[in-house]
Image (cartoon, rainbow, N blue to C red; front, side, top):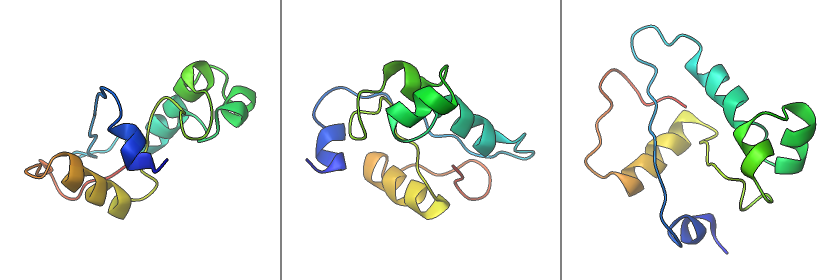
Length: 92
């Protein structure tokens, strides 16, 4: 199953984070909160992360986090065609 097909297979909640003026380490904090892409690894490295607690496998890992700014921009265009970041570029 392609990831986009899976993401559209049920209800989803989408949160688009932008860096804002200061950033406040939002990328690092979000990555730590979400955890490793593979839930089994997340359970070892950060057992309180979202993926460690709720992920099942690589495809059903509870939450999607874009890997790059370019990936985030492309994904947001698909999900929210009219979205415009309030300040600067979209960051993950």
